[in-house]
Image 1: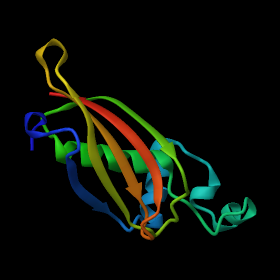
Image 2: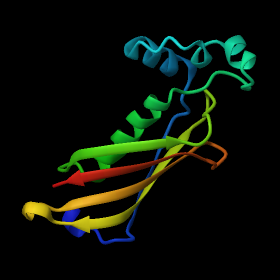
Image 3: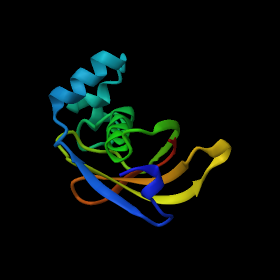
Length: 135
């Protein structure tokens, strides 16, 4: 797939990741410096009303970036913004899907804007994102 072959409204193939286990969350916490205990400690998560530890939002955005690279490997991601709607429990798989919402060609280079949906294992939308890719 290339930016030139897409049309507004095109649905991109879903990418499934996970389940995202405690080891992956711990590794991400260590690598990123995210010391928030709600990601690795059940007691801390429950103390603030969660059912258990949750996946870091930026880990989810890393998965979105992996999907972007798979969809359009030759493109450059110029912008990626996100809004988190629900927490993702550690142990849940996630699915990343996208739809083309805008196409243009500034300076002769094809630019694609995608609306991205991240769903958990219960098929609930847990995050919405928008990406602008060039190339």
